[in-house]
Image (cartoon, rainbow, N blue to C red):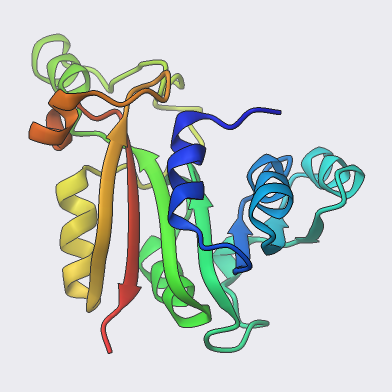
Length: 200
């Protein structure tokens, strides 16, 4: 299965032969790609049983777990990279999980929907309701997203927790990148992608 643009960007950040942990790994597409093309040693954590079955069928080492319980089963620097795509906003304690990611991994990568995107701002300002989009398709009352944020919010959280941002990029709902997103990422980017590590 081909990678989405955001997954391909993440793959570019992963060094060949690295040890990778994918949090909320879904059906294991990203880990499978990294194993096949970049010779990584990958593991996944997932809660959904159907996704776990698919991971096993694809030969992905996967553990069923609730990410809100943390990563206490892993020692410090067990992995070179800890990845979490489109899951941060569904975590009850994202600040704690970011600390755990940078504890067990030398570097961490996250992606999340950007609430600062101009369409979300317009819906709130002009229509007076919680935003809905292809990136955020749920109603306010049935959304799994419990902690939506903007790029600025995320960067402030990193600064508060002594986390250094190494790379940042954004894509749209079709996972495409544009020049304008480089200029105004918090306004034009629908999905944020960050690579970071704990300060020494």
